[in-house]
Amino acid sequence: MKSSVQTRFWGEYTTLGVLTLFAAALRCYKIEEWSYFIDELRSWESTLNASFLPLSSALRPSRQLFFWLMMKISFSTFGVSTIALRLFPFVFGVATIPLVYFPIKKLFDTRVALLSVFMLAVSPWHIYMSQMARWYTLLILLMFFALIAFYNFIESSKPTYFLLYTTLSFLAFATHLTGGFVPMIAGTYVLLLLVMRKFQSKSISSKTLWIILTIHVVLALMLLPELMDFIGVWTYLAPGIAGCKLRFGLSLGSDADKQAPHNMRFSRCNNAARFAGQLLILYL
Image (cartoon, rainbow, N blue to C red; front, side, top):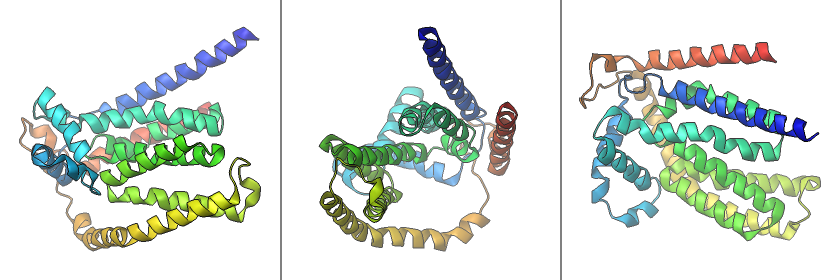
């Protein structure tokens, strides 16, 4: 029995390690050669200007100051280069694989957790975002663990989880306005629990859930105008962004290979993910 448990243990973590290395290889592939997206130029500019911003601006929504300061450290360590520009998005993208595994395993089981991280490892969009000098992979982690912390708070009623949820939600919102969807999702979850009471945890009363829901409704109403303005701006810009497929080769020691179009980049990521998915289907 003990030998069987040890075999399952080592098999599980060996599989997780292989998936993490596989994810790292997919995200590392030609990371230095792909041409620059226009938003990456803004990241480069914001990183260089981050030192001149007051630390208090980190508390303002969607300022990404913490992210710019991390990028600044990367520039100071490795110099102004493609690798330095895309290092932290790559690190966060790869770290997502093992980090999300354990909460998913706790909620479901080992099989579901491994399948989930496999799908994330070969996700073309996640690979793409892990190679882009933007905060998207960091935001995914912050929002995921904020919602996990909220779920644990509802199940256990421990204030520590609520404090963690509040902190991560704030950091997500400070990173980008879309972090404001976290309290909206949490509020919707509480509403569903109040409607379907058989799913309520015994450790928390309906009265407490109503108080939590009220707080989240107020927060949602406060955030809604800013989020609607943000969505409206992107809706207005969408046709122009879709039409502007030019990618810029930033002269940071780049060569002609960096002029490879991003649609080819995404296509190759998609093909790799499709191939990996076919292998999974054959395995199952």
